Amino acid sequence: MKEVKKIDVAIGIIQDTQKKIFITQRHKNVHFAGFWEFPGGKIEKNETPDIALARELFEETRITVRSASLLQMKKEIHDDLIICLYFYLVEEWEGEPCGYEGQKGKWVNKSELSALRFPPANDSVITTLLLQK
Ligand SMILES: Nc1nc2c([nH]c(=O)n2[C@H]2C[C@H](O)[C@@H](COP(=O)(O)OP(=O)(O)OP(=O)(O)O)O2)c(=O)[nH]1
Ligand SMILES: [Mg+2]
Image (spheres, rainbow, N blue to C red):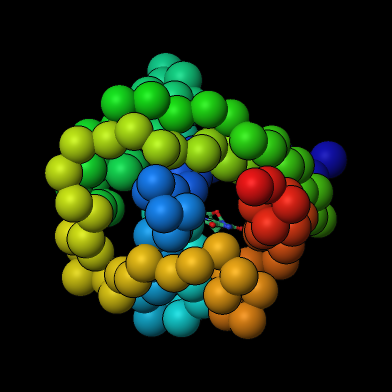
């Protein structure tokens, strides 16, 4: 029988009081190279999604998360790979986010998100964000 691999990913939608969102661009030579993304990454063994979120956001953007709420969970089933994405809304943090690992980062208005290229799993999350006040 084929072995099925499972990856869990914690993702942070960093939104300020003006409803601007900080996004980063994925590096060359990775899956979805050059696509925009919300910062985040793989949840390690023995980590809960929110602990992984705080670690990834510190590693990638240098912010310290103060509070986050789960906005959406998505499961993608590929041939021999199951990817589970935990999208968190992060509205309280310390520090100023940057692309700390050399990735390009920028603040955008919610309305700009649909014109940018994100991985397909992000579509419904972006729709949810656009429906929020
Ligand atoms: N960070 C992030 N990943 C996303 C988004 N949408 C989406 O489908 N993904 C997928 C792409 C990847 O398959 C996976 C994230 O894995 P990653 O390679 O960025 O993980 P990582 O930061 O731990 O990277 P690495 O240490 O393994 O290099 O989730 C998103 O908005 N943000
Ligand atoms: Mg990452």
